View (tube, rainbow, N blue to C red):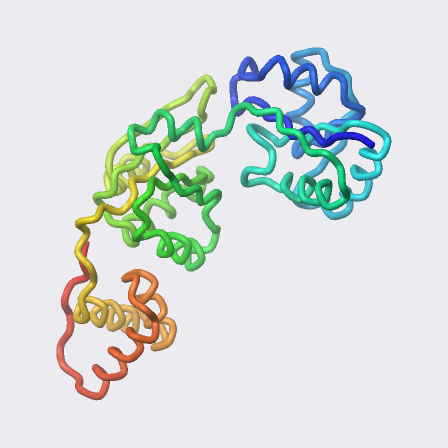
Length: 286
């Protein structure tokens, strides 16, 4: 019976790999790679000739049994396109399947974009919340952000260049324009860059400078002195959403998520307000 080695590989600079990782990749019987082209670049650099098979989000279910069968014959290494396997990529499914099948799973630690960005962001690092890749659809992305709007810990997010501006626009709306953040691009690569400021400033900056490369965003958590949403602020938000075309039900749910108030409580306030209509254009708290 073999062992599954979860091997971290460089996130950019190919010299950021450990001696133990290189030794492991040389001696296993098979390498399961999220991106075989990226794997070939790394293996060619270090003259490693171990056979490689693909294991990514579109073939993972079909390949699971093949790789588990290979583990019956000897050791297998799992590598992602870059960084640590299983962190925001399909590798965790192979790890889970190997554990369930009774194979030993051993980590070979190394680079991770989230931790690398967190270390240089200049924001609190004693605790953080990793959100991975934000959803592509605006509604889902805003819902994900609303779940952490009151989170006091530092937030870490991955984002693609073609969605960065949309994500920043939603952060301005949901998290607030004045939240501090660091936007890290192309970490450890030739054109590595880290931009620091507020969410609104980041939005303006990347509107003027087209996003390119892969981004890791490190965002300050909510501060304890942020004012709570009172009844009028919650009702004003529901009203604004209804005017935008949201149904009463969806508007109540959205306002509850943004404010942190229980949905049942917001629904009761909204129902009462509808029976006693008057102006409630109180601006939402910032």
